[in-house]
Amino acid sequence: MKKILLYSATALTMMLTSCLQAHVSDDSMGEILAPEQIDIEVTTDKPGSNMVIMRCNTPGVIPYWTTPTGKSTRVCDTIIAPFTGEFKVQFVGLCGGGASQAVEKTVNIERFDYEIDPMYVLFAGENGSKKWVWDPNPGRGGSGCYGAGGYGWSPDVPNWGGVNVGDDGVYADEYLVFDLNGGANVTLHRHDGTEQKGTFAFNKNVSSDRAALTPCFRNGEPTGQGWLGTVTLSGTTVPCGELQWGMGPARDEFEIAVLSPDEMVLIQWMGSSILCDPDWATGSTHWCFVRDGVQ
Image (cartoon, rainbow, N blue to C red; front, side, top):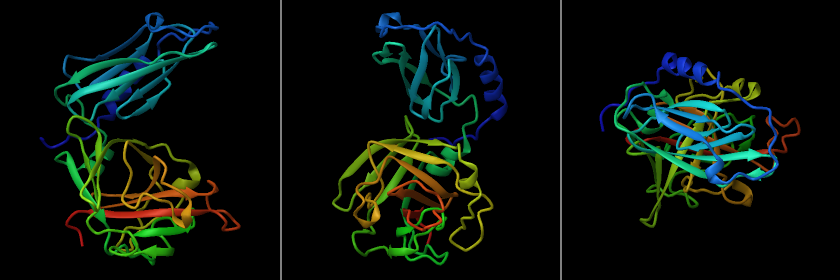
């Protein structure tokens, strides 16, 4: 796959400004809409382009769009697709009577007319595919590549009960591959040789308290920014996909504490979502990875 381009904020801003001028009706509807009552458009700005435009023309409806790159509730929204191939969009209309049956539309992406978000490049690499393995030397005063910490108090690596590569179910031959070959894909390669394929989507919205945290890179240098948002894995999970302390399986959504071309740290809260709990009663599970080949 050819080298992935970077994201064009100017082009997207112009199209979003146009979309947000769409008419929003205040009419209320007390029925559940049938698919034939739903009028939506999913197009590209030019045939084969990677700018996807979604518009709901049905009055009195709250749109709920599900796309390969995330979700939206805008009447009109614009997405810069980060991959070629089929781009499938699902629409559900929410109104007084409840949620409509889902309606799907598909457009075909043939080329990158618009630069894609650099976060996709960090996850999947400049050539559209990247293998992430356990970090053998996570450093930062932590206690392993997988383990627990105080949610927020431990802004990057686990500090409690950490596990090193090769110990207690943290298999050295389990890894993730993120790719942009026909979709935003992620595949978990398990110790037993099986694979679990899914998709990924990220959300860069982050609360001010998370943005104020101070994670470091594995060499000890501050990243210069707080947590970066979330990544949602659908259809698969991470290696050692269990929360610490017997708190059950990992959820779909992971907070991104560190992400660079060479390293990635993902975190989930355990028990509750109190960040920097003053009583230190809220724990978190941490997964630390590096790009394959990094020692």
